[in-house]
Length: 207
Image 1 (cartoon, rainbow, N blue to C red):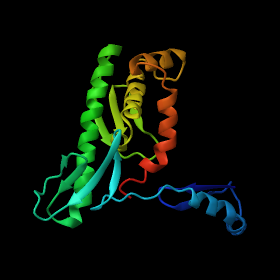
Image 2: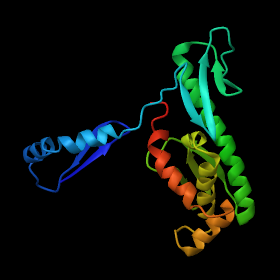
Image 3: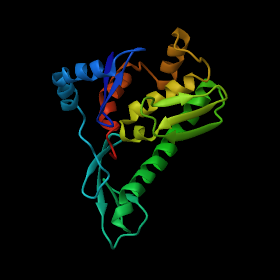
Image 4: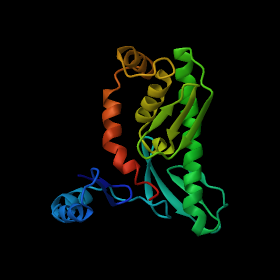
């Protein structure tokens, strides 16, 4: 039996081998309360996209502001993201702005790295995958998590370099890592480590 904690959804996932007793499995889970509380205690704090909140953005932080007299369209003014319109749709419009900004920045990153690697990229898109920060298909379509826009620039650019390097090497061998570092402009270990550390917090933005 295997018990896993999903910090994003705050739920337990229990995997049983074939023909295992569900009753015994549930009884076993009841003995794991200390472990469960430990996992829940380490869960990153939720960061809803609501007026007055703050979210990480690139190498800094943005305050979210809503005022009825402001235009409905979300715009950045200094260290604030602000807009008017219905407050019930404010969070959705903030996320749309962040997604658009992520797509813009990552498209620029990919274009820069693709030119260095002398490869073609067919498309760059953003989504909200929970387990992968980026992906690359065999036909040159790259997809990234929009949440990378809330990470430091070095982290976002590392992921972009990683996926562009896959346009040449669809594995993680030595040649791949050499190209990845060449595109990134130096060692990637620090950015990779920072992404692992920030990942749980980034996944809680907008939740």
